[in-house]
Length: 624
Image (cartoon, rainbow, N blue to C red):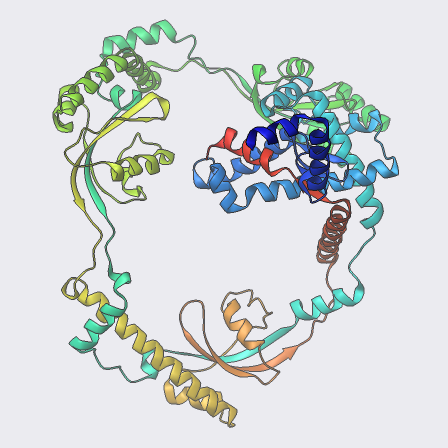
């Protein structure tokens, strides 16, 4: 039967039937992957494709940001759990959606505009704040971009900006909405309030043994230890090995004599400049230079503010004209030179002369450098010896004694914070070392842990203290304190509610406060976000705004104090929102409108994702 089916599939009728089946299946959406999307296409919005190169570049950028927080680049499964691939595709699809419109409208960007965008891009600005071609090539190369890709991307961005600027540039916050926001954000209230304390209540009874036991049983997770592992650690790095070296005075003196010329600190100059953007300014500064007028006087008369280029050596200045001029001037002098943006006046504000350090000044640096050199010559040999000794199950302490290296002890938890006892262990390596410690098994050979900077670390697992529930005798004082605090808080909350009831029945806050030796205080006017002096925090402010002008209430503030308050004044805003706040709100409104518009364009064009290619890219580049 199977042979018959195979023969039929090879015949012309079979091939025709197969074609109909393929078309039929494509009609149900499989065409998104099989017919429409190529093997290099991750997604498509309308006729605009998002290829694998674009996706990986955007994905890597987002993954790098996450890696700065996690300490490592997320794997494909971790990224999927965080929704990273979807977020990247949605971000790229926004641009692709606008590209469909720019194509329909026939928008373009002139070469002159692209050149302007290039010059204005701060990524390619050098020391002087101007465009540098060499830096442009360097940045593109490090980012994995070609020049064609960069200009294509900037052209697309400029076209998208044309669309959004035309549609939303004048979309400001409506006056009614601005007024409502102003009323909400800038209305103020003033309260009389008292702060209750333990003197406002009767002292709660001490807990019994049964109550202590019951509380511990209910909150056992709060009184549970974490697993710790006691270890002895030995690290071998250039820094740790160099510390074992004793450099003789004769060697230091010889090195000083041989290298003191290279130890000379080069001359550095503090340089500032002003741009002479008009013929009048150029003439004014040229006349001042000829007359010997001070640079500061000329700047003040012209109403200019010099921009500082920093304190630099001649070799640190990439602009040869600037370097020649600045290092040919006396301190306080200035010169007028040309530049990309026109004429500019360059001023030397201060000069740090070059100097040769004395032997005493250079002694520590020379000793450290010689020790590092000796350590560099020996470290590989010592590494091999330590590995051989570890293979022979030699303990850490004996190995450390043999090479004069220190041994460190720590009770390590899973987070690895205790590994800060190792002075040469980078903070970013602590988590990895802690993972190795918690993966180790007693009485087994534990391999070395390679670290950054060609360093290695070994440890002996001395003791494992597993996580466990603590007994009542171990945590009696903590349980007693927790119960006492709960009872005090409950009693204060009850007293506060009682006072609120009395206030609502017409009693005066001052009279109640006098009974409790808690005298009322008058707050400064505050908004919904609290007072400027911080005495009324956001929690108390929210409670005060929860009712009308005569509202009374009780609330526990952010410091844990029980507050009873009475609103004594409710004021509407007396001034409208300032221009900065209005512009910020308008910008938010424009951003919201733009986001809704782009989402609608994308939905109309249709977003199709090639899940198979997407999964392959993530696994190939970032693992499972």
